[in-house]
Image 1 (tube, rainbow, N blue to C red):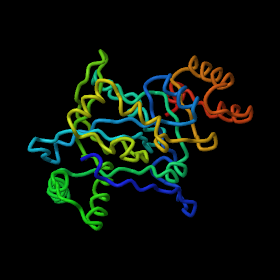
Image 2 (cartoon, rainbow, N blue to C red):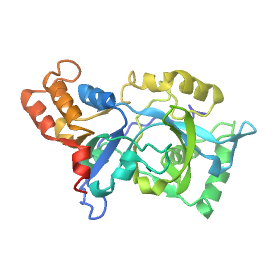
Image 3 (cartoon, one colour):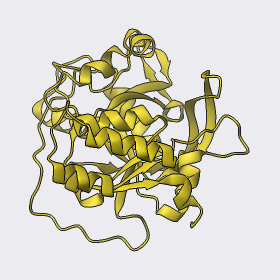
Image 4 (cartoon, one colour):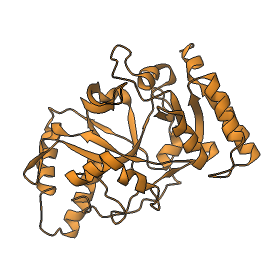
Length: 294
């Protein structure tokens, strides 16, 4: 099932024009919960996607005669929420002890960079709509079909499987870890996240484009073997340059100083010139200070 989709490389386009938004941010923010993730991204000047679980119970799918309620998609998530509205996304809901948000550490990229790299705003679905009903019918046929496909049906199937990696219900459930690191489910209005996704260009001969089989999901949950393998693929990671970055967020002044020292002393990973290091440092902002003026 996970190797059906044909791999077709997508080239970056140089002939597009990005029109500046008047409502959403003109940056794509990738938030992180831990400082170490930020250092790792800057060390390699790249972000490595990971396989994330998606609750799909709203689609009412059957696979091998069993209810299919979850699949894992390799991705990196971004949002284009304006700065003055970003606190809920970063910190979560303080009333709900289990909603910790996505973290105060972030790299924000120019939206033009994201569009050039194929990062895509996702499609939020009303689960009561006719579109969801028809999508359910089409998917139940495709994921359980054993016969050979014609070239035309291959094209249609590729489109559908690309599409379903870019959808989410308007409201629904998601897995999170609570303050004791236990996996829990919380309810969310997903459209509030303004989510964009980077889906890596994986060749199915290297890694699955989605995890659906129980054995694959179990292996990923226990050992992260598929996520760890993305680094070994040819085009899996999202590479960036200094000029692609608009902001870097850290939570406190202490971690700002720590990150400055890390950048200045950077010897491993992707090499940067002294000028590039200075430019990178100039982009660092302290979340807790900015929040006072929002």
